[in-house]
Length: 285
Image (cartoon, rainbow, N blue to C red; front, side):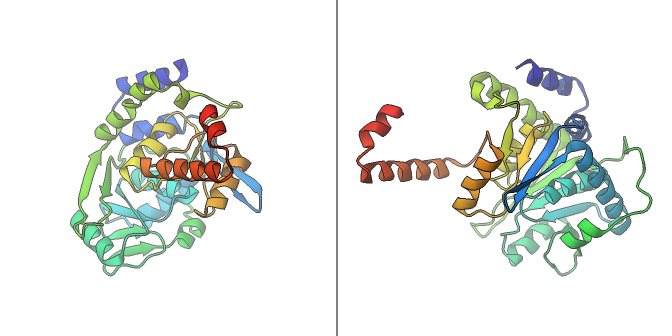
């Protein structure tokens, strides 16, 4: 517990900015920032390696989006999403994560509300400077500075509601407000000891909930990245893939909305009932 409290204490005494959050997270240079697997082969990327990509993409954005104030990220959870999130802020812009599942008319409406005219991802919106994932991955800048900028960082995260009501809303959070949410994890640490428990020397959070949502961004990503922990990415969201990924990577944490766990519990109870094992399951619980 001292490990967590020390970092939160330092954060409490420092400027409450996104730059400060980044500084803490990427100070864990040799720790694994994220993992993903292809054909049952695990690929790992350290925070130091991720940091280099953040710097490279930041330079790319400064060159291609120099006149923009806000840059949207319209893509699924992925290593590239994380790199783009910090790169946008490092380039001095406001970052606007948006779900790629959002219908195009709703996306246009949200971008218009925010005044955003640039986006990263494989989607095309009229009037926006769109940079594809391929361009982000393969683009380069020959003048990537050795030192990262200490000043001139973007310090605002813009999020949207899902738009299911037909009236999407756009909300802006400053670095100070984001840091307040991270500091709230102290309450969770006090009341749920299991959340801080390492297993085999690791904590691995499944990147399941979309980081473009306030719950996914705050609880699933920011609460964990500040401590330099590991995120595991899914190849797709099929139930079999989720189960295989959790087993292969030895995932320790999965955050989800209550409805998912309720459905999962109902499914387990039905399976137990059909096998005549209800009494055994209840005893086990």
